[in-house]
Image (cartoon, rainbow, N blue to C red; front, side, top):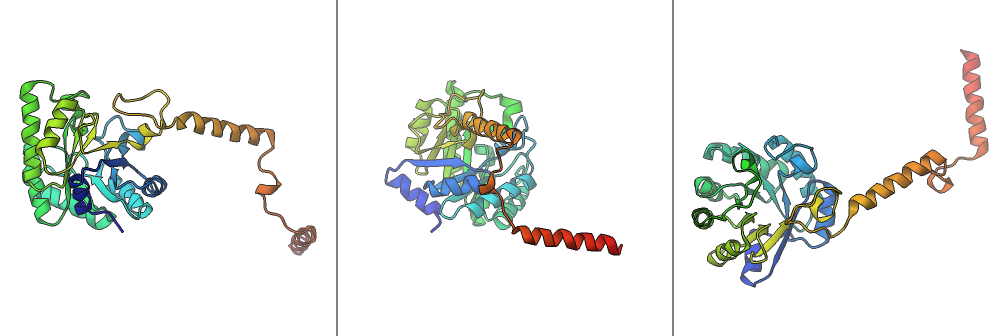
Length: 283
């Protein structure tokens, strides 16, 4: 059975911590789903970790749809939440079109969009149309050119605004909200004032749940480790060693071996070569 937004709310009400992870393809979705992740986020972070962009800003809706479809196919139980990318929800009308495409074409179960009070009317309209929405405040990657990559809400005025934003998102009908790169104390206060789950990333342990980027969690980058991320494996080194071993065996001629190859009877090959010679003679 698929998780639903009602299941996620029940986890919050029972006091359960909610793990969430990003996934961007069929295989990673399968692994996350089998590990029991209740929610998978197809984040526009794929722009950087999969497509090689320097930010999430260049990611298009078509690029998102390509990856969301794969994640939905690769999962059976998790609730799949998909980001609406930069400037695909600048108005209510545009948001309806974008979210409608995501829900109908990819099979995702919810969308996520960034912003507070300013996007509350958009959230409300999408929810009214039957589209589950997750909010996202604090550091909002799509605004990186405006706010930079830094912790948000450290000043009193900014902290108060984030509380107002969170309450507005809840009032608009969102089923959950991501809190990214905000002080742990502030995130705990926001969480205590909301009925809906908060999912933290660089926001401390006081949130209802946590989300991590697949590549960060698995240590797929040797030279980059965000402060808010924890490497639960160091796959960059392991994968690199495996690739080096493969290349070395190919160069040495030790791969493939007989166990990796198909065979045919010698007389069948002899007959095939004889037929080839006959055809050459006829020509």
